[in-house]
Length: 394
Image (cartoon, rainbow, N blue to C red; front, side, top):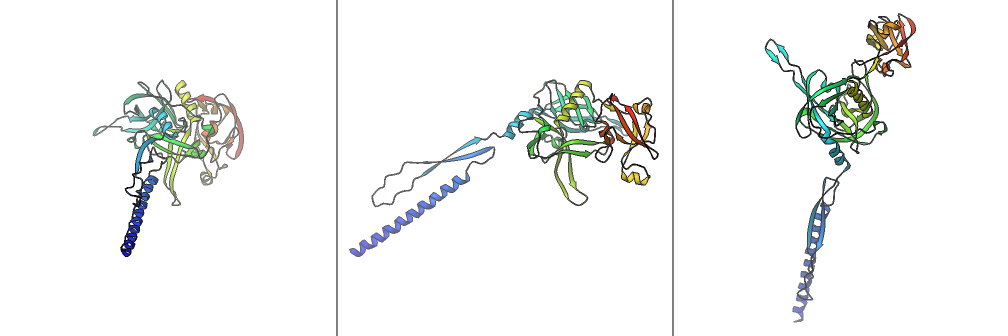
């Protein structure tokens, strides 16, 4: 009997050890599931709670204790972020701008002028929509598509190619308006949001990034620079032009206008280079367009050819940078000041003309009515003339 009792005791010890091992494995599975369900910084987070049930009473004092069962309770919590709040605030005021070019008659019949698209943002309860000049340039008729998909006719109020800003007015009920923020207080690294209609099809697309740099100047290839631009790495694509760049307060701090993409001459890949017009510039230009139908700028009255070091070397000119006067408008401020054809203007007031300051940008530091001193070359002779500028909305 003693030998049988010894074997019974050994058997009970083996069973107890096996039960403990099974309990440990089960407990490990519950912990693993809990860790995978930890709250995450996404729009919806899963919260897992472990609710223990009552412990069953052991059938006998020498029976192994049962492990507590676990009940998993999962609830969904919507996390409202600053980005979603900003998008909810501005999104209804963002529109797609459609610009239809005039039809043309050919020997085969009438050819459609086609429709180009960009983005815009409603800035007033009167229905004024801010967009880019290059979005509406050359078009004959306009319309806007609201965030809800409704298309409404629009009329062009005015445009300014030098700032790439234009204003159209929608003919209908205004669903929402956006407010301007102060672009003068922006800092690199701030989070920003771009909203627009890339490719014209993906309406009210939202992308986010940061302010990469401030005060950038970009050559338009048309004899002037776009100055004081905001650089961002928020994804901007064709069709985003004219759409707002928004801060986390839901304020428009820029108007998206262009991107740099592709490869450089050195073989480097270019990515994440988007540029926006600061809201301080866009708002000032839009206000003039709404009030006057155009932007009033100083008028000198010349036609010219820009000069750079390569042209100066080729034609043995006395200045490396400046503008060669090809025509002087009759009765213009230039004519009254004694400027002649073939003069080379190298400085306007306090601003020398160079790679970073073309003629138009130097001239636009002044306004109609200002009297400024021009420095120029007539042949190899350096002269200074005083000219009183006039206002022009052209």
